[in-house]
Amino acid sequence: KQEVTQIPAALSVPEGENLVLNCSFTDSAIYNLQWFRQDPGKGLTSLLLIQSSQREQTSGRLNASLDKSSGRSTLYIAASQPGDSATYLCAVDEGEDSNYQLIWGAGTKLIIKP
Amino acid sequence: NAGVTQTPKFQVLKTGQSMTLQCAQDMNHEYMSWYRQDPGMGLRLIHYSVGAGITDQGEVPNGYNVSRSTTEDFPLRLLSAAPSQTSVYFCASSYVTSSYNEQFFGPGTRLTVL
Image (tube, rainbow over all chains, first blue to last red; front, side, top):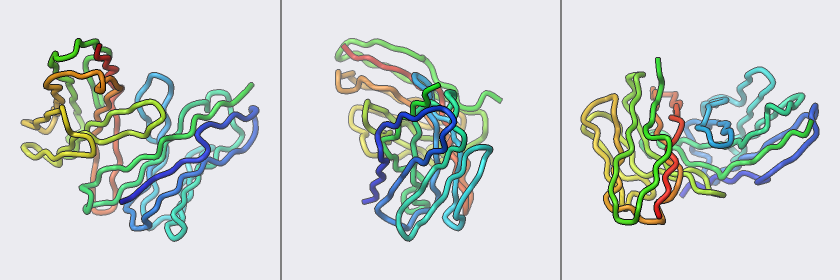
């Protein structure tokens, strides 16, 4: 059974630092991996989706990488800002075998200090 | 284009009451899902649908019913509310192709069962 883990559960860094959030998964036979952002009391916003054939995706200051063989994905945030404070979740999609439903990590709560 | 909408945003129930959480999407997505999110845990799948008239159980289906009579709507029914169902509920819809599956989320319903 696929399991998704995000470590650390919480992270606090000063503004301006570059940082990396980690996501690991136990079964490398994945279809997609998706990173989401969740602000307190709000819904989830999709940040980046990496298809199984890709190694990375970029959007602005965000870069997500995927290494299926090692069961890892990282979300790199450059030049962090207080507005980046949120919980970041990763989710793995196993494709048709699981009817395209997502398996979720518990998230990393990120606080950027001004 | 409203995306995924959910009503109500907040609800308080007494143990044993029933209610329906509404979810609608205007993106013509075939796939729709219901999740619950509890503190310190990732999202857990309750029920999902791969098209009108087709539903299936997820990880935590007990105490919930769903139906999908149209592509747009996917209501979640609580049959007899219990305190263990206190949670935040998210509805999602997905655009799925042979190589791509991206989920879009509603803003959530925060439910308290007394």
